Amino acid sequence: MSLEQIRRDYESRTLERHDLVDSPFNQFESWFNETLNDGLGTDPTAMVVATCADNQPLQRIVLLKHFDQQGFIFYTNYNSQKGRQLELNPHCSLHFAWLPQERQIHIQGQAQRLTEEQNRRYFQSRPRASQIAAWASSQSDPIESREALDEQYRKIEAQFSDQDPLPLPPHWGGFLVKPTQFEFWQGRRARLHDRFRYQRNADQSWILIRLQP
Image (cartoon, rainbow, N blue to C red; front, side):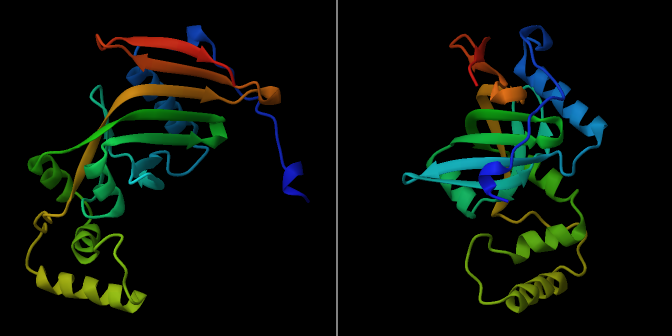
């Protein structure tokens, strides 16, 4: 079958202005909870983080670890490619694709580092194997083989054999993405999708606008 012939219509839901609440954070929470309760897909916290530095945009999937009225938090190696790009240019975007619900959410904002105490509290709540891996991997750097990576892990495991939890690595921590714009997308028939944008004003209020698909 030709790729051009692979298509389906989206018919499960609609999205109207009266379905949306005034706060995009509360609207996100509503859709997120529906996604959890539906149980139709895996990794509902998975989100694409898009960064751009030196005129080169890059995307990768990470896991959302917290959200509230301030923004959205994920954790990473600060020396990784995304960490370095966010230091150069904190403007970024997040994308959630909840395809079983025929929904997407796009968020634009700016990222800022969490405090050392916030990083330590979350890091030491992680499974021990994940703590070891954060010390063992120089994320985004080249390595000669899987065997070499596994050996780095074993060395760190031995180094901290008598410590539980492990100390916070100096290169590891979280970013808070503070949104300036949200878009909620609901798939519809004939590609006439429902799209609504929340845009933040200078006075920090939100304007809600319907967009053409």
